Image 1 (cartoon, rainbow, N blue to C red):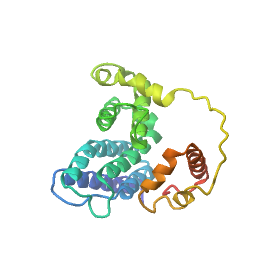
Image 2: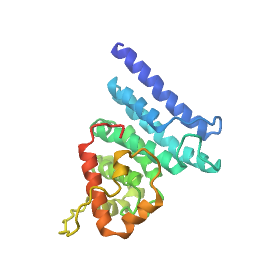
Image 3: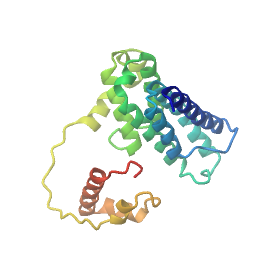
Image 4: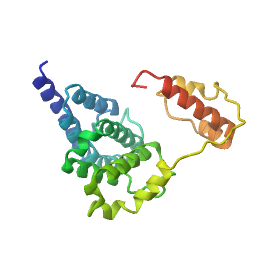
Length: 239
């Protein structure tokens, strides 16, 4: 396809994703796009070099996330084939923030888009009290907010600074403080929870696994080492 056709198709796909999310939030449909399908739509825009459309689509997705989560919770049960409401919106938030971080410099070129992204990300983490004690999705959102606030001068003034100025030093302290590793005498056990890293999409994390990690420093050491190695060695983006 020509570049024009690629741009047109990617715009249409992105628009369809946003319309599906808005329709579900409004109660007009029971269909929600799978997180992987949303990620594919963003990938299409990236392939088509439709950076403006990619950022605009990310903004629209972020605008719908809170309403989608509220709709999922109000209906009392997860949609067939989807994870729990919070897991679904967290997955979309991660995909969206990932795309925005890749084009961080492009985003900063437009004051309106930067402000819109900042406002929507603030909505997503408004319930986070302690930046050092939250989920991975929230930490990624907080990191993006920190970088935007640091790089975009207009965000340091009202109305944005009114809501974020107090949170900024807490986020910086929790996520960006230099850490000095301490010596460890724990022995790395590559077999600990190895099945989780072999097939991370197999299913939900068992509570017994969480207890093993939480109750034993040695297990935590092995789990963290295995996680770092798995991420560094992985070549498949879908994993």
